[in-house]
Amino acid sequence: MSEGFTLWFTGLSGAGKSTIANLAAGELRARGHRVEILDGDEVRTNLSKGLGFSKEDRDTNIRRIGYVCNLLARNGVIAISAAISPYREIRDEIRRNHARFFEVYMKCSIEKLSERDVKGLYKKALAGEIKNFTGVSDPYEEPLNAELVLNSGNEKVEESLQKLLRTLEVANYIRNGVVR
Image (cartoon, rainbow, N blue to C red; front, side, top):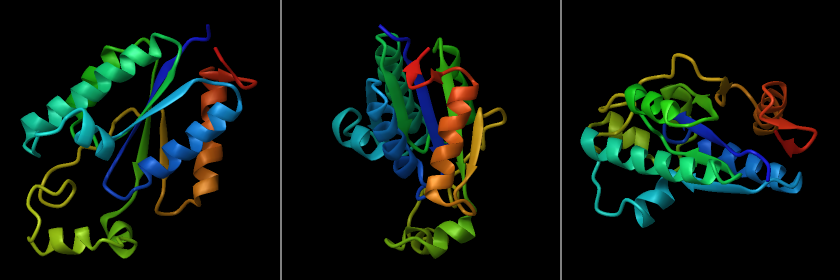
């Protein structure tokens, strides 16, 4: 069985975490890898139902995602997390608990996120209509040592995907389509 790992996407709402995670999952599956995605919104509905958006609840949610990713990864699966995961301390805790962990920071400015926000969430958050909105009225702590930073405000989706796949290959997480 091939060795799994955790591919952890972090970034603000709308930065492209789910988009790149889903494209990467498709590409990795096409290369023969076993892949599971834990999307932040889906986890909140199915695994963390009832949790709010206090720091404690956010930390609990992220720890749950990290735990499931670790279970999957140690069983030969590429476990992909696509959740905001706003607090550096919890992300670093998750990293310490994983044998193989690859963090991708989806960087995008609030201005660019606001421009492409079809739901109008940033507009409402900036107007104070949404409380505890990450990056506006609640903190988002950028990673200090992410294995990869993708600037979704300036890069095309395909460009970001190819950077990710190349970096995973160079870092020996995947090789010639086979998980190392």
